[in-house]
Image (cartoon, rainbow, N blue to C red):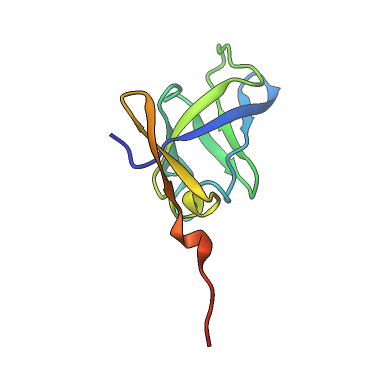
Length: 112
């Protein structure tokens, strides 16, 4: 069981061993080493080697069939920036969305 699951897509494939996905620093915390930022449930062989504000760059095995548009399911090691992006989160139980949670961190203000 996981606290959070991220759905991302391959947005480009510059060469057969390099994949670019839309999972940047805004979605996955960057303080951990690259190898410990996100684990892909349906692609455990992929290894992160570059991370920017908008994208995560992955190394794929030479013989792979990944293509632009493929969906990856990632488990983040640290979710603070992930959840702060969204007003609500979907709770999934037994493959069904059962409820939603409001992200209270989105509705904060500084008072003086």
